[in-house]
Length: 274
Image 1 (cartoon, helix red, strand yellow):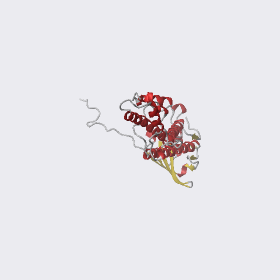
Image 2 (cartoon, helix red, strand yellow):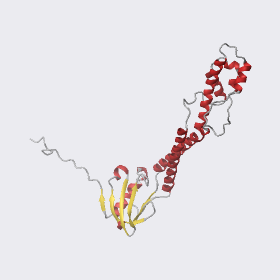
Image 3 (cartoon, one colour):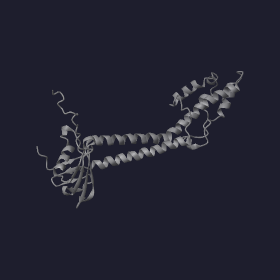
Image 4 (spheres, rainbow, N blue to C red):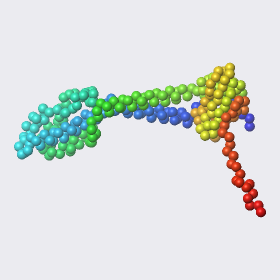
């Protein structure tokens, strides 16, 4: 069966799917690190210091009421004057947080505080306000918040790179006809200019390289069969057909691995003859 006069190998669904997955993955990571760097870690710091306030309030209540003589009014007056102990660096906290931040109302309640079970009060308070029942073990400092921004920019750069490669490849193809090969950039190179065809990676990785030099200029064509055309048998292996068409018109130097020859064992093959 003769090869067609021309073959066009467009980007394969396999490559496009992989590039799209990479784009989505890096984009999702960029969004997550952006949220952590801009608001997430700051909000977690707010929750951490709120949590510690419940523990500190419990200690103050015990200190002020050693013999059970503290009245509800005395405790309420004291609690109303208190504020959550927050770091001086405002960059570690949400920008919308109003300072000073007073103690939560639940800590003003003498009847709830006298049980000295501040952890139960925190669970009740956190549930009502949609906060995590167990905050982080340590607050996030400026270095850790800065790291989120660094990784965000890295992921954003990788996402932009994946988008660029995806969009660029969508518009490209590799083709060949009876007179020339047209590379991914749209340059048409006559077969007479093709000097070397390197097939050493074609069988294992679907990669081949063609060096050309002549009226069309000087350079190298990278034939990536997995990216352009593909090797699906149900599609009649477009990349393989493209290579056969090129080889049928190629007259330069062919580079490929020599077939492995297994030598005969010593003494010849008929060792059982009498």
